[in-house]
Amino acid sequence: MAIHPLWTDDYWLLIMQLYQKSPAGIKSEYSRSVVELALELHIPPKTLQEQMEALKERTTPSLQRLWDTYADNPRRLSRDVKRLRQMTGFGAGSTFYNGIDLTQPFEHDYLPVAPTEKLTPVMLTIILCLYFQLMTNTMVSETPEVQDTAHLMGLKPEEVVEVLKIYQTFDPILKREPLPHSPLNDEAQRLWQKYSNEAPEVLTTTAERLKEYFKGGA
Image: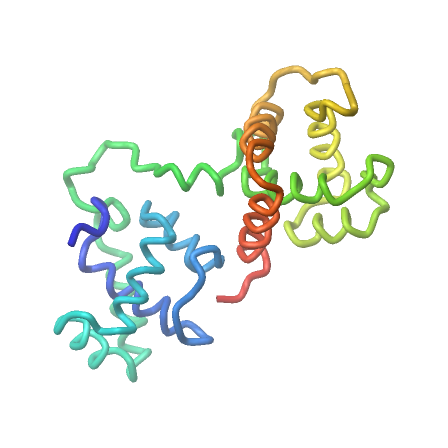
């Protein structure tokens, strides 16, 4: 079965370590630990979650051997994972991909919208959800919901308010003057257009899932 072009069986060690991370078990594809490994390997989080499911079920004899070798030997697992990460080309799939940009579509969501920005599309999506939960006159730094959202993502309330004001310029009801083009404004507009064509619960559900990354834990 084809898994992903960048997948290599060496990565099963990483899946084992991820699965064993407390609390042991299959981790959400939106959790920080899964996303960070996905970014490191350039393999979508969903794929890594599916690999954890395969590991749990020990769907092949080789996975059973892997489990028997490492399940009760975390020190050996940690040592061998460290050795794997030190190998030349780790995270590049194989030498076939040398010199090729391996950035995957999902990575765009977790990377800053521009080198001069720290906000990511994931953050902008969460703030967009907040936008539809507030009245315009409550889109200020003193509002508890604004402060909670900022705290969750490690931002200042004023930074959240700045994005809320950008979203106001796309709202046809408010009829605000458009802002000049910038990477932040353009990405915010892309997200506005994307979710304006969806049912409201799509944005709400997506934002709640994306918050898992910032809540830490497994």
